[in-house]
Image (tube, rainbow, N blue to C red; front, side):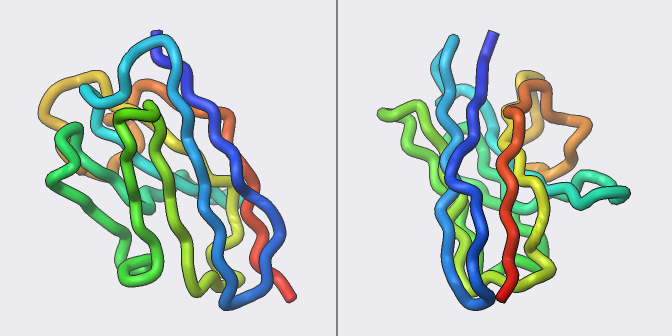
Length: 126
């Protein structure tokens, strides 16, 4: 059973940066597509950035393109979300997830992902 733990969230001013980490245990991470998702209260979980198991395919929400980068470090069994030029509308709980089923590639659709972390709060405010 793959276990995921996120960290790195916090309060940051608009225009600032944060790097979220997702550390995996229980199994090697490099066989799974990985995704970062976010959710605001009362809203559906939104796919932010996803990467295929090989790392060769990435997929970003239009709202974060050019600002966020998903990184996987298989040697450390860890995935990251580098977030730059943060905006107040980026405020949400951020989750990392891994997909067990085949064919997901870098599709950023939450129901396709089987393993989830507990989430980390990101607040962008002055």
